[in-house]
Length: 560
Ligand SMILES: [Zn+2]
Image (cartoon, rainbow, N blue to C red; front, side, top):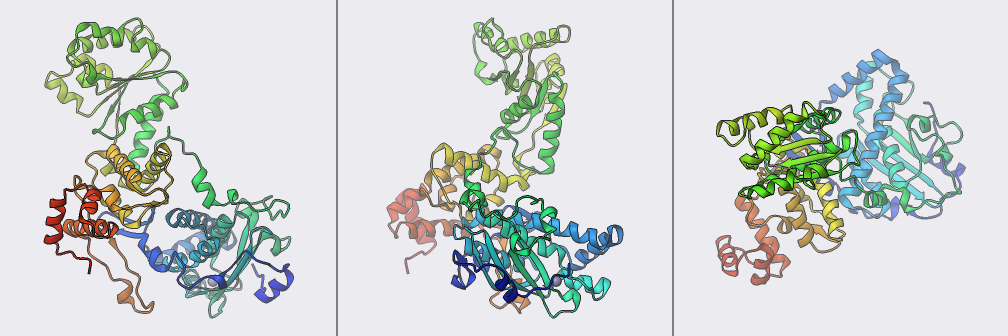
């Protein structure tokens, strides 16, 4: 693209932008600062995971970026690669806008827009300098100019292909387009007007609302925005921006949250099993959400509106023979599940007489088509239970036609951020308590915790946080972790350097905190919160006054 236009020229052509927002109105230190953003970056060392809030990241060498680009250009040509990378960059920008509004609950659009260049800089693509931007949401107008120093893409392009006659930072220029359009709710397109790939000293990038670029805006089609061009007749309203949508979007609670390999494997098996009416056996540790998975299987089946009847088999322990009717009688649960699913939770605790009856039913099933599906769940290995005489061999044989392993949370830690968000939504709407989210430090601790109680425990922790946090505030460590749980170590965190030029200060890595350091931090936070009133702080921490007194002395804490 060889559009060359200066900001002054652009301003002269565009109708004057009157008000609404201007980068010049912002303080240098307006949040989220580079420090705040670095706080969202977590290195779970040794765990194979790097997070930017809830997005998983990887570190790759810039040469790899260069090699990937060169391979793409070799196989699909320059123009196709440019389009593909622009599109990928757009998607990245949309995700970043969602991340910024989610993590920082930024209702100041100007500040949220200003955070984009900082994230871009932090991610290492280039050093972005904001010359100026201004926008008017009512008129759906935007104008901005930025400089990129030392762009990775431009440098790599130069190295592979030499000086180019058009701009080369394709991936990067898609990012601000996606970011700004998502935050403002109308299409804003960024173009590079000068690029180091063209031999310029630095890249110059200009962003404008789509209408201001004139009639030829091929990016609209590229980004899937065809027909969504600037329509002044439709004034901008907050409901079109993600900041607002994020609060309103209702979550589908019947879905399985998470994208980890372990959960996708389980999901795929359930979806396959749903097509058939054979019994399914769900195996998983306590708290892994087996009933939720059984419901998911039911919804994926042919009759999602038919009844789903959950039965807690341990309730029959020690029950007298008349209880058989509860399950098998004329008005029993089996009859109620007709056409749908009978879910036998904790099936190994079914007493022997009921096991015999169930085995018989399942045996009959092979001859006459049963009008319902059986999904059984157990936290134990059924083969071992057979050896111990806790499960009838024939029943095990009938139930284990389609076994599905439900993974423990420690095998799907990549799903924790999404699960936190899910449970936060769930509990804050259940308790009708609007919250701003979690502080970075409690989020980090939740990422590091080992969850012996699995999903149920994570859900409980978040619910506790929702209940203890102040309405409209943020959930912090002392709202979530009582002294019952072993406080997890916080993830190692990168501190941004005070000077950008000094590599040693940028890479200053703090070791993970010890359990005692976490405890000291929690005690200190509670004391400060309670204005050093020991009794009040003890209540917050769920400790007796004496126990807190002991800790204050042991850790040598004082208001000074
Ligand atoms: Zn460039």
